[in-house]
Image (tube, rainbow, N blue to C red):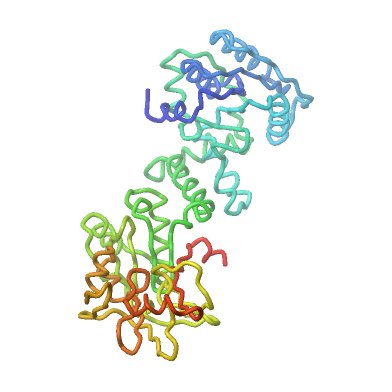
Length: 424
């Protein structure tokens, strides 16, 4: 069994009940055979379109059902003998969905060739982005497990297993647009251009689907603040369509026109070897705690004001009147003393528990990455290190906590996600 045929089985939940729209053609015949071999709970229905060869298709469909020992039902319609393809499709789904029970899922034999044809039809009709998705594999209560399988593979499977099916002669009428695309246009495209057009359509529709859906689902995992971007390594460590989309988002955030091969190599090396790289302009990238971090020191160090709050990197500082619980993210504000927020410098020490400790040692013990250390905010009182924000307080700060009942400084981490940025 080919890997693509195997995908059909992987997309089926054996605990569910399915209804297969059996047309009598090769697609639904192959699908019925594959699902029966896997003991899928399934029944078959045939929609009578009242066209020239509909009776022949009905007879073949009944033979297929009997050979597989499956329940079979005919759904009548009031279609005229020369109804359009659009009218037949609308009536077909109306009949199928009306017959569907609440716990059942409708499956059809649509395949990759159908997907390629539908994309071209949509394109010629002037579709927008949504139409480039072509036929979806799952749409509400309808599932199309063969949508990644080419027509050639389907015929190969049918011939190998000597399956019964009927090739509708109307499929050779090239006056019908879909038939012209299938029988003339796509073969000419494949003749003039290297590679399979169907496979190209599969890649395109997958990317369109990702681009229109992934922001809501995945951009929430990419965190940012001014001069800072954090993306989980798991999102960009494997080659995939999604990976390229995430890399493009990185480039957009950093102000790059595009992300080049050299840039991608730096990220890959940083992931594998945990190296730090100069990336773009003042941005650096490095591996930290399961994420790739992009940091622009110049932007990070800028202090921004918003009402009674100040921002440094993704640290927010705010004066508050009282505190219920003391921790390393809030600190007493000593009366009549000047407080200054500055950045770490080598050699700085803090007096804690009666011992003079290097600030660098505190940062290292708490696992603060080297790239962050020189950007970590420190609070000073009269030029003495008073508070290593979020990590350690001086003995003086602890004494002030015991006697002061108002005027405190509170710090918090302020990181948002790219989805909110792109939708603000």
